[in-house]
Image 1 (cartoon, helix red, strand yellow):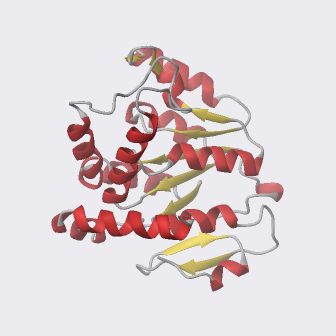
Image 2 (cartoon, one colour):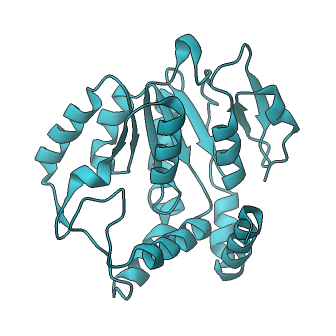
Length: 247
């Protein structure tokens, strides 16, 4: 199956199973008050500390690996640092101290949520990528990931943390993912609005947005804004992108 057919199948499946109320709610979710500044991926304003946030299943770890390879920056998966064998989490104070030490490194691509340490990461990041994909897409991907990695470790999770295919908590987890727009997104938007005047914010709302962002050249002389399908302006980094169809 081609990549495009795979994406189409994913979208069609998600559209068919997502409750209408969820889809309508997502369409009317708030957007940024400030567009944020978008600097080139290379040159004097090269991204050096990039934070990737978003719902479970939005593709944070995948994007971190891809962007890390493109920018030649080390990747930090927070899940690998928070979880210990047997899904034992790090105590709160110890976790804040651990994250503080991680962000002191000169350069990184860091993915993960962990609301209790978001302030530390936003303080030190020069760029923030918010993966704001539709919740039904994220839920589908989360289930697909569970099938793919059941009973074996994921590359972004600490050793000794495996997920059984038939987990009684799976349904609860899917509900958790679907509730992201109500449960977590308003807080994230508020935090990003507060720093948009001094940080580079990249707000990606579809798979197409992510692909366009990754396909942008590392360095270029000028910047252009292209219009998102919902009339929100998202910054991109190449004149070529103005010719690409958007979701």
